[in-house]
Image 1 (cartoon, rainbow, N blue to C red):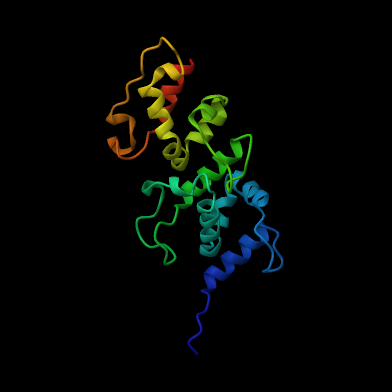
Image 2: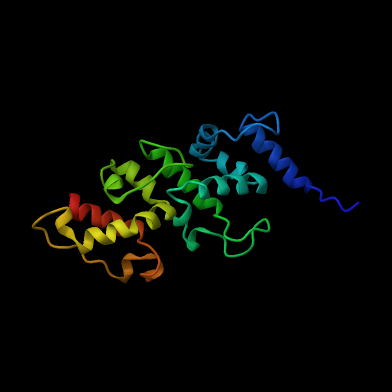
Length: 191
């Protein structure tokens, strides 16, 4: 017949991923807490994301976050159709974003929000984890740019931190700030 069949390798990968989620019935929901636990492991996320079905599901869950969905930059997405889908978030970025979401005190990767002030107030280890995500940096770049343009909002008498092209991804100010640049701005304003 003309029925579409699932590829054998995908079926095996899907079964492994579902077992990692402790899903025994196809009607079960994907548990955000279990996904997060998998993604905090140094190795498990790569095995989990071998399933295109689960990679697509997690990407969809991140894009469904009302605070983040519009903030996923092109640099964090595959530039070719992946699983027949355009704008699929890369495996590496999904891992970094879920870890960033976990480092925040409130929310999960499906509802977390980020702000420059919030990230600046974190300890250095959490800040490092959070700013590793391109999605987070893209989301907070406007806040950081505003802090640099209007420094009196942070320090009434301090001079502004001046951003230049090298502070942006690929030295392109139409993208978003690098991790190093944001850390420099935090160090400058918050010591």
